[in-house]
Image (tube, helix red, strand yellow):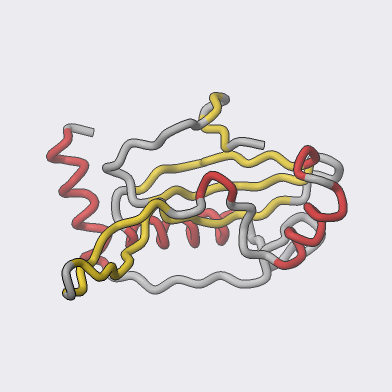
Length: 142
């Protein structure tokens, strides 16, 4: 199963984005998982005896969330019984964390274990992380 955004399959993602917030839905019972996925990560590579930091694409194309309960159901029921939907693309990591937590809280994911696979909400971000995103969007005219 591929990722879908606005009803269309996602093949490639604009490099200006650092990640996305997503919902994975078990189509047999409508139970969902809300999470985030970064698109790149920093890796150290040895080049001519010196360490160099490079960015490498993450496993976002084959990613199925971090919930053990979700992964167990996927193994049991098969990937064909799940939908992977991208809800929002984010430019900064701070905004990515904020948007994920916001969606999780709006849906009360911790209060409805029969409706959501989520077991915890993690957020660590600063106002300056969000304001820098606003400035980026303003520069791009979005």
